[in-house]
Image 1 (cartoon, rainbow, N blue to C red):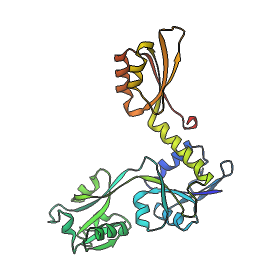
Image 2: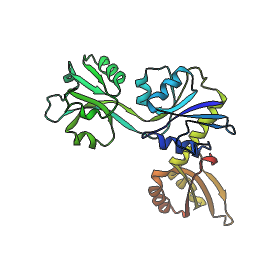
Image 3: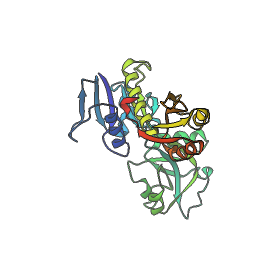
Image 4: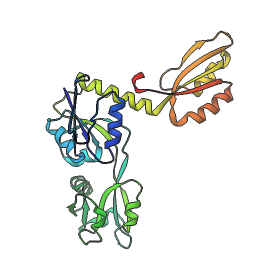
Length: 283
């Protein structure tokens, strides 16, 4: 069986579970379950702490896992990123007190930086020639400055509201941009058939989320113009209609562009536009 690690909690957990469910895999039915076997799909799911997933995958005790790029980089393990998963986007930033003179990357020299991602921060500062003390905290790093533990922090930022409420301001360029990804053990070949099946299913879910199916009728002499408006994820399917002057077009288009594409198609002369959500099983 292919052994897959998934986050048991945190911001990546629910999207990861939803994606696996849409891909056709069996999930736990009891929150106390730590291991779920799915013999029909030849997989075994392990619900683990997000911070530990890269460690288990890196040692080869787990074949693949879903975690954040930042967690992978901070783990220092030989686990390999296999594919991005399109959710859990975040930015890793430095933040200092509003009244602090620290405003540039160079100002961190000799300072104390509180973070949960101490290896990531240390490596970044070393790469930029800055010598600073990295202080590891397991959570609520934004309180460390007020409590006198650190001079500034480095943490994952989504909206920045938590930092502002703590009297902190973001400065300097981001250390990195991160999102959820599928990682694999260095002991698992990239072309392993089991991994290929998993990857194909997850890509199917991503495609279903990002695209919709669009059907419309268009005068035959305007097919080229319509296809230019909706080139699609793949080449459009064009079929003749009973009325020889018209053709039917079916194409996958980006979900985020649907409204604009409909306006453009009506402008070209299309009619009967129908938009249908995709199902992952169709991909």
